[in-house]
Image 1 (cartoon, rainbow, N blue to C red):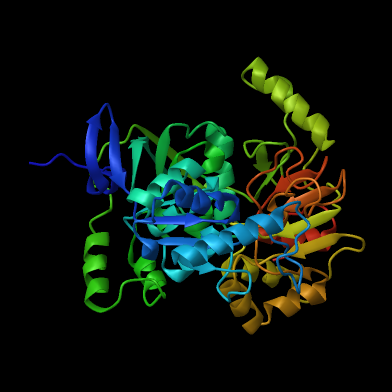
Image 2 (cartoon, rainbow, N blue to C red; image 1 turned 60 degrees about the vertical axis):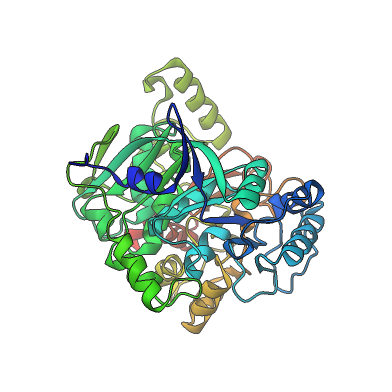
Length: 470
């Protein structure tokens, strides 16, 4: 009788080309995706005389270094950004890989448009030169970020040598209270087990609350597996997954679709499967979450106060929290709600999908952004932007006082000197995934929250519980 297996075991076993022992294997890679920061991979392979093994399974898009202003082209505020874009374009066209250029109607952030297009599929191993590739686990894939050397190897051979991670299952039990989003769920998890709590693991998200999430919301949770230091995060595919992917441009069709779904149904962890670690989150106890410091683990409920650093469990963490409090310009015991804001941002691979924009629009409808506050929204892809505009969501944003931008990573990161950034020392509430020092501009103080919290806070001009404006 075969031993019970979890989802990680099943996908891993199905992809082993050669087992080297000591938990290290040569595994088959189903999809490889590049953006412009990895453009050098094309020229490196060409110089080495190595062709791409399967151009039809390799894709590229422009998302990191382009501007999101209307009327954009190759010109970008980011120094040398245009050179990276042109290098990616030349390499993609020469090799014949699937390419989504700036003017392509489906262009967007890799982790948004790959699921939208059906390029990301359950049970596949999906790699990209970007840490947040774990997002793709929301459709039941095993996905992780790799470096440029590894992407070259994957493109040339269709394989990678990898060490199998440990397995963790996080069960979100119970029903979410009204006003609690997928972003709040994953932030609460990071706060509970720390930003290093997933180190060495691939995380399977399960439980009643996860099963009830839309695919877009599952993508949000898997996205921030990286903020747990996990190798990957994923959710078992189910009927919601199949409905989401059916008829997508790159998804299987006809008999191949039927065969794929039959296989995808086998991927769920066996009832008595073993995990190296298990964590349970009681969703009934959650409230909207917001970060106060410079790590995603510096997170509290919106009704709570900033903690005293001296109460942290280790001297190292005490010092980290003191530094965060100093950088953020806040005080222990201070209520997080009510902090005055200079700017807000809705976008990024974490929260720029259609359901995110709908969530924010439901709060912004008929309201105005607080005077003097900078408010920006950058949809995650061309498809998301078109669908939002067809529903009139863009008008709700612009009438409220938001800038409605083009798709791209935008102000998730400042892009270095000269890139898009918020003014120095600005306090920003953002729907992104990282609140590190200088992440959104020099000395910018970034707080993380859901699109609903960002919208409510934009109207109030200060960090605000979105339930107060629902």
